[in-house]
Image 1 (tube, rainbow, N blue to C red):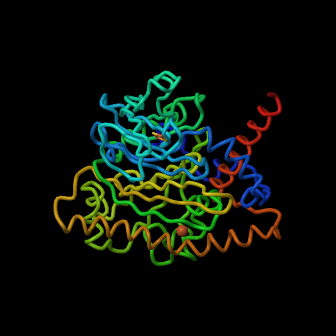
Image 2 (cartoon, rainbow, N blue to C red; image 1 turned 135 degrees about the vertical axis):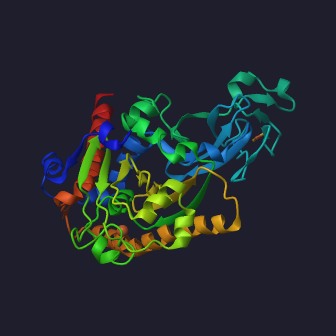
Image 3 (cartoon, helix red, strand yellow; image 1 turned 90 degrees about the vertical axis):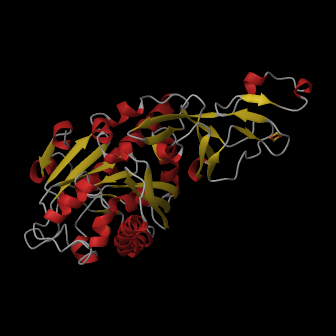
Length: 396
Ligand code: FES
Ligand SMILES: [Fe+2]
């Protein structure tokens, strides 16, 4: 199956007609009050990608995730029954953080303060002198956060009762995601960064190619060429709050370094060696999750987590369907991740300079051209979600 079958992918002219043309307010890119609304309307009640099942392969495996905007420390645990659950990393006695470890394996979690001990399903198993408390053990289980897995990816939702499953949330894209190598990944190479920029302004940088020829004249050479100097996508698709685009591929790309090729999956390496003129489709998923390059291109994910109105953390991962069997493969994978980092470091100054400028409030509006329609779609989707939230709050 390919993406054209699940989301209608429209040529630029047709897709652009679906979107508005006018300028939009710049305020949502820096205003702390607007960010508060986005937090309530979107981030505290939308499925958020926080990890991969290969990080917790066995019963008792856990990872800790700090979600600063929600003031939450989370423990994502594979239970003895194989289920993936997420708990607040907060002892139900008097609140102590259960673990400081970023990841590990445990048959149970004991709080170091007074030794209340919890199972991998969050139940309170034992507590010293418990007969002197006047509460039932069942009422002392760890507080849980809604968790679902799709395509090997772990998603959480802070809403106690999310209005849709993660599969419903992604709609037709869910099946596409399940067909990707990341669904079968056993390992990944990760790189994280923090940037002084609003999450939308940062995401927008990865939703348009307008800047490629200026910022990435060297590193962007596989997606820009004389026939398409800006490397504009050929097709755009919209599915609810999500978007995708099919990239134009330079038919005469520069040679890919052998070290980089070695890190690719076999299919991707063969296609890249052929110089195949394959279209590459990217998903820009709501709210801030980006899957780059379906097979045969080497695929990576980019997840952005807002840290405030003008600060964002990004996590880039290249997923692998086998362990690195030798040192040169390990090197090739690291080299691949660092190559992505090099391209992103070319973007960094532009995004941060944009944030500094926009936050001055001097320009009250920003402008999107047709080839920036994915940015406009994200902007409009955020507006809709905030309006829904405000209306619900007004009605309550
Ligand atoms: S705070 Fe955890 S056992 Fe007391
Ligand atoms: Fe860029």
